[in-house]
Length: 128
Image (tube, rainbow, N blue to C red; front, side, top):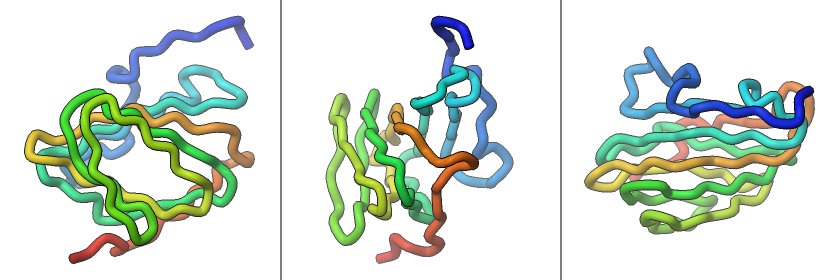
């Protein structure tokens, strides 16, 4: 492993492409060749709500809103998000994101995780 790695997150493959969702997810952990850190770019379109939530068994994450606004559902609580808000989410907390009127762009940062990941998708979780 080198002393540093540089990657443009907007050039990383969009892992949400082809899913017919107004979302972009560019996961940079592998491209940064990081042992302990994951950094990703996420974009949710205007008023688009993720159809599923997710949680991690061990990994803590932080999200930083770089543009737009929206909401995040964390277990049973809904939190408003605005540009430059940073929010930490503990392991075990189910979360999902909804873009505001102009959408929302976030950078997500995750810590160490077990080999192969520890994420669990929760389908149909945020419904009105």
